[in-house]
Length: 236
Image (cartoon, rainbow, N blue to C red):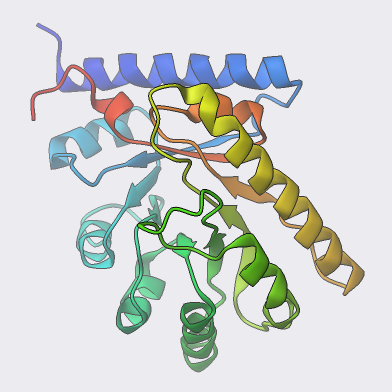
């Protein structure tokens, strides 16, 4: 009988092979992409198996659940907040989150900066960009992000490492490519401006989920967020 660990190890091997192939086709280094395992619907024993297989970057959608799970696992586990963050949950999120992927407006970013200053923290964040112009999704538009970019560059405590996006839902993964390429180009543009102001370039692009991560890697993703693919073959 296949154990939970065996099934997850098999799924991880498959995902890593797909990632390696996409990187090779793109002429990128083998270590250019980080896999974040989304554990939103995962049982604790599934998470245990991921850790046993050496996967330590885990992603949660809700700050409360992330905080609860982070308290149960070793310090070497790196928790990523990938879901929407409300301003009244910022303090909790900063206490247990390695990287916040979903900073979707300037008020939230300023709240993070304020609490980071108050608590002497240096949080790392990504800015969520809604390039699909989908009214049901949160995020900066490219134009609003450009308009406030100088203000963002002047932050003292919060480390803006890059950008995040989600492509429109589609059956064909290839249809996501224009969205991912647009995010890569926007990150290059904004990063150049920040370098000219004496800062660092934007190095991280969080894009690509179970249905389109291969295309995202080909378009320049440095972080992919996978859940369903990693838990195939397991009972819900």
